Amino acid sequence: MGEENVRVYSDSQLVLNQLDGSYEARELLMARYLNKVKNIVKQFRAFKIIQIPRESNLQADTLSKLATMGARSMGKPMFWEVLKRPSIEETEDVMCVKESPRCPGWTRIFAS
Image (cartoon, rainbow, N blue to C red; front, side):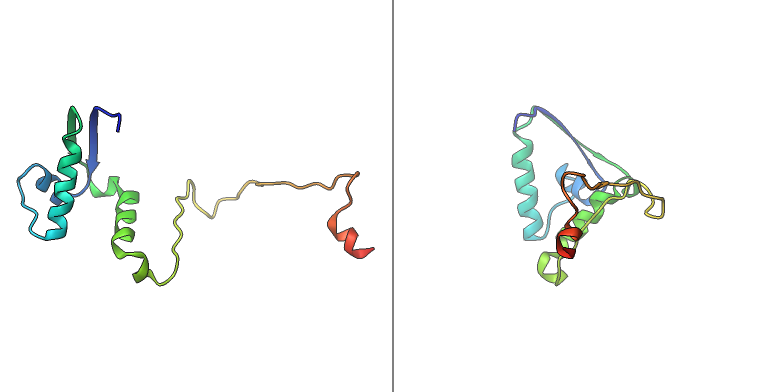
């Protein structure tokens, strides 16, 4: 991967405790994921996992919930957007289009 020193921030107490050996992964699928992570961790010179409050990790938490639902259970596509400011604020013009004197507007072509 190229990285040597890695810090991971997680809000999952279960994952942290399974990774440090305090908890065991009882389910087969979880045990397979844990084994995969442990093999990846071995590739780094230094690896540290740090628990953070769930409210500090809302975007990642929401994405993980969507991922565990699976695309088939959704029934239709779902789009995700992170708003940088409230959607009720006035927006700025994204693209202003002006008619060029050398090129008449498309409405004139149909009106002729």
